Amino acid sequence: MTPADPPPNRSSILGPIELLGKICVSFVVTLGDFVRFFMAILAGTLRGMDRFGMREMFSQMFDLGTLSIPVVMLTGFFIGAVLVIEAYPQFHALGLASRLGSVTVLSVVKQIGPVLTGVMLAGRVGGAMTAELGTMRVTEQIEALRSMAADPVRTLAVPRVLACVVMTPILTIFSDILGIFGGWLIAVHVQGINNDQFWHFARVGVDIYTINTGLIKALFFGLAIGAIACYKGFRCGNGAQGVGRACTEAFVTSFIVILILNLVLALLLTNIYVMFWPNQPPIL
Image (cartoon, rainbow, N blue to C red; front, side, top):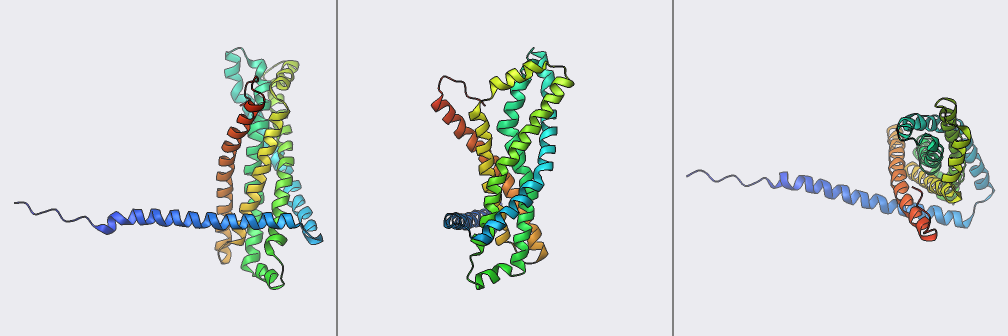
């Protein structure tokens, strides 16, 4: 007789399951804490801001929005140019090179502009905002506000979130303009596409709903970036290492949320377009 096989080690079996359970519980707890924080931001917004809050919001609009215009415009220009460079050979082979205007403007306005603007702001604005609020938490400035009977969320988070919500669509417009200009420059002056045909198909392929679709996406992206950055700043760990980790988590989380929101909003807004204009083909 052969000896019986030893019983399996229970710890080796339960270890991965226990780890997965801890990850799920941690995710649910974090999500619940973020929802509570986000509701506090909404409540502070509905209550309105005092003179200090308005001054802080305009200051954040300049720091987080106006100073981001050059990098957003530069990114939009090169992405639009690269889009035409990559798409021209395929369209030329099919005899549709003149329709690059429609594809370029549609892609930039509806997808590339809002998403790239959101990603750039998540890196530049989200990181800076998280570092600022995280430093205030580490140095106990947030606790000092609470000791003076001031609401830190209403005083610090609400102006920053509103600044992101207001400035992200505006920055998206700048990105769209430069992206279209970059695509037009390559298509007309490098690839030799007729200028009138480029703008004719650009005008035919894009309507007001399409433009508003990109701006609606940018609005939600700005809300997500501001809320996540403020949340990570308020909940960062102690010391410089905690602030650095919070900045990294803010960018990664904002990036993932932007991608998820882009998918959800694309499906939702496309279905709305088909619902109200059933005789028109959906503009994807």
